[in-house]
Image (cartoon, rainbow, N blue to C red; front, side):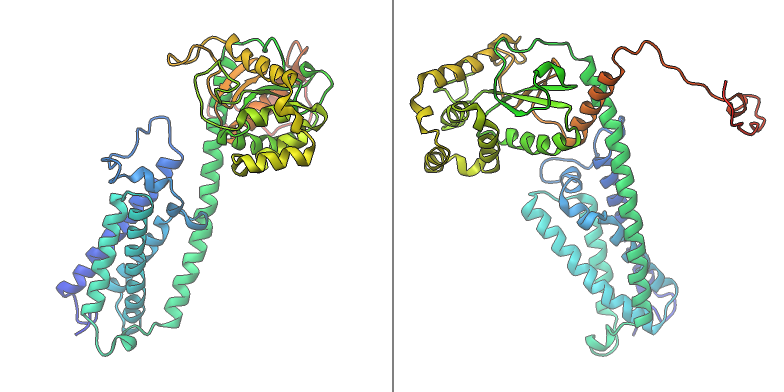
Length: 425
């Protein structure tokens, strides 16, 4: 008894139905991936988010959803399509190939579901239904086979090669589509963030601007097109994120960026502006950084390159000895300077009902006199920087002039436009 070679039996119809279910659920997984990761303004979230455990968003945003940059739903779509073709165009060789791939697909689907449940602490309904459909297909192929399993799973090399070739081409195409969707979404979001940034109220620079700069492009702070005052804690994980972002962006915007680091350790020992005692050792590191301005940039970079290790007092002691700045830990002038920089955080209007002053967390950036709290994706930060450079380059320009050749203007009467001429006005 075979699965597909005995006419349109119930088992053959069952195979076709399960394959169609695989196709539908795989397409659902694909749609979820793009909707969650590159949402339109009207997207309010998947209706299948029923809690923390049954949650499509968690899966769609995880690395499991797009291994090697290819959305996972594509593979389910191709496997489902193959099994549908086995049901519609049966042959002994095609059925054997389908059986091998069905067993492989079922094993992978169950493994993925179990791994997601353990690592993500959630399951995606679409992925779950797809796995059940794959198990149904594998069960049919397992139940209705002739001879030993090894012989019943011997594939046709031609069918297998065609399937692998189609999978490779489709995976490449969808990976490119994903990149286009990502870039388009990134540009859309970046444009919105730039508009939001320029709509922010302007705030003054701190009364005591830090003499410690992590990026210096001009002698005077105000002469650079991009000017950042960064309230930073040396042991802050988000400040570490910003450190690596600025490390990348200072190369792209070489000669156009100044970053003054306004030391703001979130430790009660030296910070009475905000009631947070989060990072023991942050005051010590701030004093070490402030001891010798000629060493600041080098020390600053080394601390953030080793932020986790810097939480250990032994690492900090060795760091101080290595750079000859141990005296900072007992230097009252250095400690007074750090407290003065911290105190400037109280100069800003409060940004949260929970805290009395505007500077309440790190990193907080004053970018060209507008406040940005926390971190932004690199693409959005880059877009703001580019907008500031463009604004700087347009400063003093009183009008925009451009000419469109009359022959290039598209008529409004539905007639085809005349050929564009080479001459302007």
